[in-house]
Image (cartoon, rainbow, N blue to C red; front, side, top):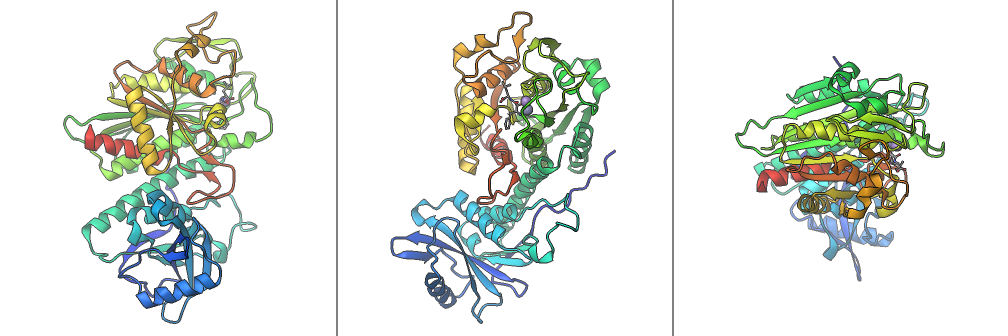
Length: 505
Ligand code: BES
Ligand code: MN
Ligand code: ZN
């Protein structure tokens, strides 16, 4: 049994009616207009005269209100804080929840020293401000020793007072609780992705998933390599057999206990490290393949979140975990394996391993007869070629695919619907088996991977496949509420879809 207990994954968040004595810094918002910056609404929580004095000071030092611009000035005597941070929100007529989230995140990242920030951004949108601050303040220093760990003066923001006119309001409390839970789930997924492959391998990942699932009161089932063998999970075993660290299949089930509740199956790719196997990857950037369990991390975090929120939908996560390594026991290009359920596959390229472990998991998930199935994976480099590093590709059955993409746009993760051109399917025909795991050409690589998975989804299931090869892991600089490393995408899309199903069936 695992003893894994996550560390606190962000600042503590609380509601307040005015700037408290504990606060060190006040964060206000500025919009951008042709006549210079304007104060974003902060009515009722900070004195009007103080605010207009602040605006004068900010204009004097060049603040414009441009999106995510940070301007820090000393606070006037009349405020109990040391300094004021003004964060740009961009044009007022373009201001939406995601911009508030990003600006709050940028403000949170700019404040160091473990202190407390009070903010008026919560007047604009409490939930978005809370999520942005919580996620912007997330940092990962677990593997730095005292030699390089940031000291107290450089540590992240410790606490946030979200200013609202009625802090005792039940609806404000509920909004904050929900946003806190969502931010914690996103941070949980980030934490898994950021944990290096030396420390996070299939058995350890499974143990940690079990610990989170048990703590949330869920049914947990883990298949080890013997159980996988006995039950015919040829895809997971084939990919895992090059590693000294054997594969796992984890199942976490949240039952809403509501009669006739809709059911959602989640499946996530859990390759704890992807060397490519015998079809080995080039050395350049191979270290980024620590993120190849980003899909698994997101579905584990999402099912735990659904349980915490008590969403009236039954959710089961089926999570295959393996390490893709080259060795004398590894599978070879040309090997044939049998996926769970009986489909035979010619493994032409051992680096197209994600689809092999996902196919087993998808067949298993469909045995439960779910109404909906969402799978997500860092599946193809082609996702980034098609859509860049921040836009997930969404594929699947037409209606549900479009619904998932729409929700993803609403929550700010920005998934985009992609087609399955019929002519691509024949490229996966094999000379020796039912299917080949790759085609002999490179065009439409993201779509081909989706088409491969489609072969394993039951006909009566509404299905969406989300390729997050780029979006799950930020190798560029920090932006908005996203730091370097794991991003937690697509947790907010998946919980958004589950809540949408709860509301609309
Ligand atoms: N994990 C990779 C995809 C990936 C690449 C994720 C870059 C994040 C960043 C996946 O297993 C892979 O290697 N895919 C191959 C498929 C190909 C062999 C058909 C790829 O994209 O090159
Ligand atoms: Mn690969
Ligand atoms: Zn991979």
